[in-house]
Image (cartoon, rainbow, N blue to C red; front, top):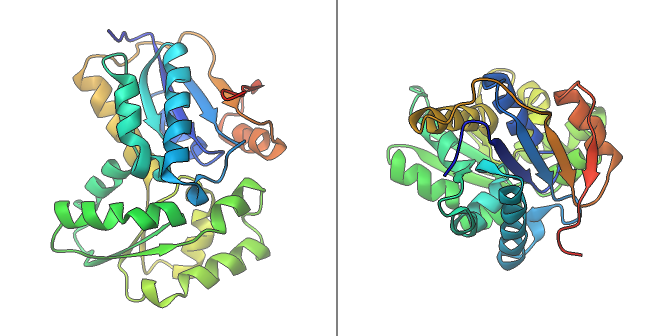
Length: 269
C-alpha cells in the first residue's frame, strides 16, 4: 500500500527524463524524486523491444526497492514497447505512468490543430504508437511521424543550443513528412532541451507540445485522486545512473541546482 511519504520514481535511458523530473518538481515541490538514467544502454531508440523490456523491468524493480509510490517511465521508447512490463512489475506496490497518454490527451485542448507531426526515435516511430493513440482519441486529426535518430545521442553528448545542433535539427524539420503541420509533438523526453532551436525553425507558426508538463499534470491528478500527495518533502532527491557520464551530471545541475550526488548503479552486473 502506498503512502504520501514515499518518493516518485522516474527513469529514462539518459538525461532526457530530467525534463520530466524537473516539471514534476516545479509542480509538486513537496515530492521527493528518485531518478535512474540507464546511460549504459542509451540510446533506447536503436535497441530491440526485448532488450528495452529487460532494462525497464530491472529499473522498475530497483525503484520499487527504493520504496517509490509511483514509477514514471520518462522515456517514449520504453513507454511504447515496455509499459506492460512496468505495470506488471509495479503490481499493487506502485502506480505506473507513461509519457505517451498525457501528451495525446493534451492534443484535445488544441482547438486550431488539424495536422500534428511527431518526431521520435526509430523504435518509437516503428511502433506507430502515437498515430494509433491520436486516431483513437482524436479521429478528426491527421498525424505524421518522423524518426530523428541523431537527436537523442547528440543531446546526451551536450550538443544543443549551438550551430551544429541547429543545422541537424533544421535538416530533420525540413523533411516532407512534416509539411503543413499545425502542431509538433516532441515524442522523446530529450527533445525539450532543444525546444528553443525547434521554435527558431518554425518561428511561431507551429505549436510545440512536449510531454514533460503533460506528464507532471498527470502525476498530480493521479496522486490527488488517490490521496497520495506529499505534504512536505522528507529527504533529498536521489540520482542514479548505470554508467557515469559528465554530461549527465552537468545537465542534472541545470534542472536541480542544489548539490547533486550522482551514484553509479549497474543493475545488470
